[in-house]
Image (tube, rainbow, N blue to C red; front, side, top):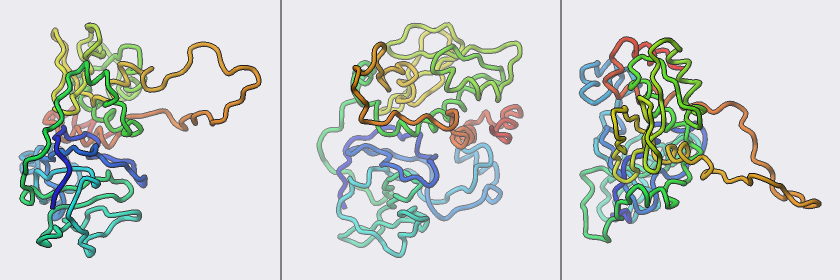
Length: 324
């Protein structure tokens, strides 16, 4: 078995959440891989069977569905980067459009027939292969991609990729971190795209009263912010959070979403004046208007809170149990 993945990247926060009954693209770019520290796959145990103490030792601090007793540190890569494997057909069950990995490792090595990993490509699932850590031997290969600094990253097309339509997931993750950083205080979001994205939900979760904390945007290429809480990007290659100067509390945001908030015109470029010449008709339809207001993912919000120790505080546990 061989793979073509040579460059390690940070684990995408999209991994834990999806859009139900929709075919998803590969989670990772071609030629890259990431390591998932959490257990994955069967057998599964309920929260009650594990107990709060064991769950906390795994980094989960509130009831969050069934817990896996599968292997930790599985290596994730794009399905197209796999070589020399074959499907174990009796383990290739799925929901409706592909394989969902419910039966455990479903890929075997062509050379030795031993199970080596799990391919997942069903609807409602990110397309990904999870390799068992004991099945992997690192061989010499091409050098890994160099880590881009922030100016290079923002000046390239690396952040404007095909997971943008799933931005409700990183928005839900960011929302959870904002609520924890606020420590129960209401949050006033500085006017702009961040207020449009998070403001209404924050107002519902943390109703207005005295002692509100200001939430702003900070990061590479932006000036200083007088806000007490600042949304900052997480580097997609290293997973390191950009550090603001001053005493503001940094709130991590997935880099593509942060770039959209920092430079909204970069995502959709529209003419500022004028229109089509007289007599010229459009030959493409206008983009459809959304049927409902965009909202951060509630599932991603709760799943993130469950993995933050602060969720054990009574005020935050109440928000977690209530959801939105």
